[in-house]
Image (cartoon, rainbow, N blue to C red; front, side, top):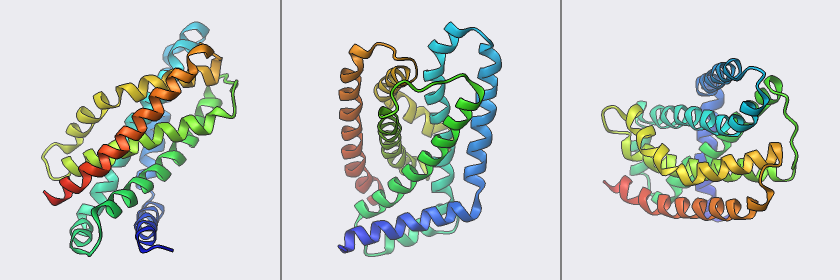
Length: 225
């Protein structure tokens, strides 16, 4: 196995092991997403039209809010014990640090997202119309969010009020991807506007590639600073 890949896997395992042992990140995200979903469920009631219009957006808004909690806690737990300083002093390429943290965020958010969707199926009368598209939509949404979130978390980690700054920077930049995800989720759940699916997929995948490239290049500069 190439040393570059082995180093990434070691960093990935480190972050996953910390999350598995501490459990507080996962529990806080699950509690927050459950409460938010219950509030929306009570607000929408039995109005099926409102339900169909709002649910795809609700799913991804709740995902982004819980994802910000995860990103903040993930970087904070490394900073508390000087882990970041040690990694920066180690003879590692900055790209290795980015991919290690990025992949850990992707794995953690995917698990949280699957559990959140299970709650959606529990609380709402859902029937997935296009099962084959579901893994791709979840992965594409998580990859773009995690790439940008990893970069912005590193940028704001040493600033005061980083908990507020991160969503202020992250949410506006995610708008193109969020629009694509909401429309693709509406198609997935309710078969809405099938003629537009290819256009939304092209926008989402292109946006993910752009975010990943910019984040990789920007992370090295941020870490040097």
